[in-house]
Amino acid sequence: LGQGIVFVFTDNDIKDDQFLEYLNNVLSSGEVSGLITREEMDETLSELSVKMKKEYPKR
Image 1 (cartoon, rainbow, N blue to C red):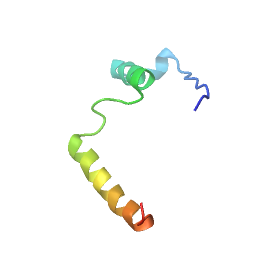
Image 2: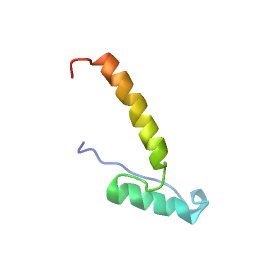
Image 3: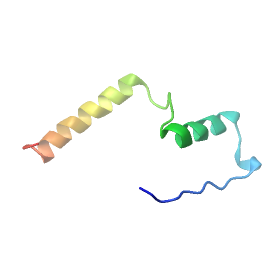
């Protein structure tokens, strides 16, 4: 936290206008909407929950 970040790219790096939309979303909200589906998110959280309970059973 508190560290500056620089994005350096040229117009040749922009292959699709969607790239700028993704970059704008990351800069403004910290996430890219539609990057993963709700089902993928639920599955990932479920898997992480199981692993965390094994690693930290008292929490």
